[in-house]
Image (tube, rainbow, N blue to C red; front, top):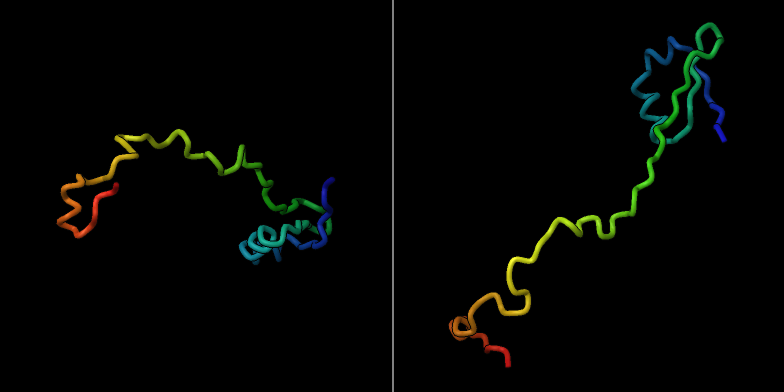
Amino acid sequence: MKETPKETMAISKFKATCLAVLERVGRTGEPVLITRFGEPVAEVVPPRKEPVAGGWLGSMSDRGRVVGDVILPATDPSEWEALGLAPPR
């Protein structure tokens, strides 16, 4: 269902306030009808929202890779004593 514009604006006023009108339409989603000598010549409407395919969950699943053992400690257990830490049992 197409929404009818609630605001009508003369082309001369639109030319003078173009950036503000575009920002307002984008922010509010309300279309503006532009007229010349009372006849419609254009309609400023907000952009369509494209659906996101699949959402964000899993979007990076093919970007990373494991390069080593993820179970073993990152450092050798002999180095733990120097750090004042006890090795795991």
